[in-house]
Length: 113
Picture 1 (cartoon, rainbow, N blue to C red):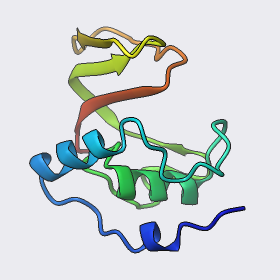
Picture 2 (cartoon, one colour):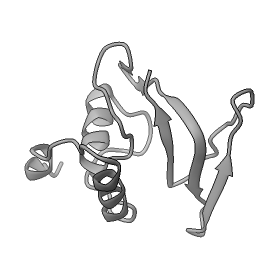
Picture 3 (cartoon, rainbow, N blue to C red):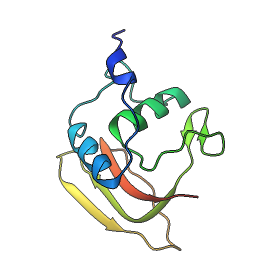
């Protein structure tokens, strides 16, 4: 297993602009290639969120970060990329539901609790 110790020292992002830049950087680059793309542990979720800014704002507290999941309230804008790398933007209403399809990459603006 390859250890990416230098990535573990990266601080969380502090702004939308910083989060967008970090997300662009890691859109095609997996900073933790040795972690299997299946069920992530709480530590894996925290590392990915902090390093890639895949969740912003991210709060590593027991109310949101569970053993193998992260509870978040999505905002109204949702972006995902299909298998061909095409960007798909969606608007989600407050009373609608959305099931995330199996995909390589997705992002949304979250509403902090």
